Amino acid sequence: MTRFLLRRVIGLVLTLLAASLVVFLVLDILPGDPASLMLGTAARPDTLAALRHQMGFDQSAGLRYALWVAGLAHGDFGISYTYGVPVAGLIGARVMVSLPLALMAITLSTLIAIPVGAITAARRGQAVDAGLMGLAQLGVAVPNFWLGLLFILFFSVQLAWLPAGGFAGWDKGAIAALRSLLLPALALALPQAAILARVTRSAVLETLDQDYVRTALAKGVTGAGVLWRHALPNAFIPVVTVLGLQFGFLLAGTVIIENVFSLPGLGRLIFQAVAQRDLIVVQDLVVLLAGSVIVVNFLVDLAYFWLDPRLSRDAAR
Image 1 (cartoon, rainbow, N blue to C red):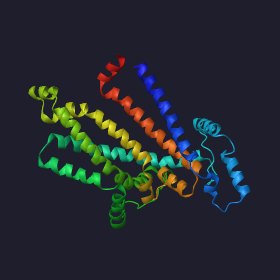
Image 2: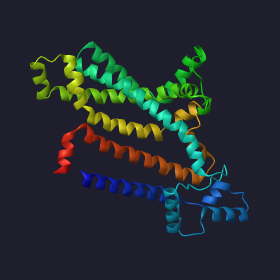
Image 3: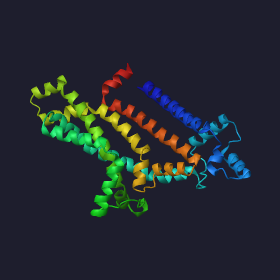
Image 4: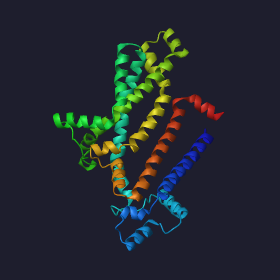
């Protein structure tokens, strides 16, 4: 087990380094002068030279990459050209919106998808199964930004129950902040819940065909007991895999939904950085979001051992 964890940690570090190298090289080998791209073609030569020096473009690419990675390791993300403040401060403020939003969305998605997937598996071929899976297919097809607009029209404009956009801030209280995040979280959660429900249904159906399920039924265990105590827990590995992928997507892929609801999160920050040609912020955010996906997948791998003890025995052998 220890050797397995050590290999996984080494693989995690190497993958993070590879991701940072790819991000650096992509931005470094882009045609044109980054300083000219940021300042525009009408910038004065002395201003361009000052920005090149500030960004380290008068140094070799290898030295710039080493200094950048060392700064990331120490929490130094550099200075934003547009805002004139440390990038770490910008990210720290925005992550307090994006992370709770992703957590709310993945929680709502799980609470909806797991029961729906289990119930449709238990009612295979019946009207409940066909109806819920039809809704799930519709949920897969509907884009989340369109759902967000519908939620704004219904819950904010018509019913005036929830704010249409903006973020109240955690200093206004947790209830006000969570109310600001509820509609975007629901718009993100429903399409993901549709995918997760279909995966859960398939995994539970496969588990229900196992011999130990038929043995439990033969011993007099009720159908509900077999479903919730035996079939569903043993179907969690593919479900957890999809959950890990979805959480990475929700954390890194909220650009559109944060702009629909005017949320000051990481997705909107990277959109603004691209529009303002702030390459330092873009580079830091891309590697941070890529790293978050890699770390989440690493944690999912570790969760497999808790869910399936057979994997622990195989790793020990």
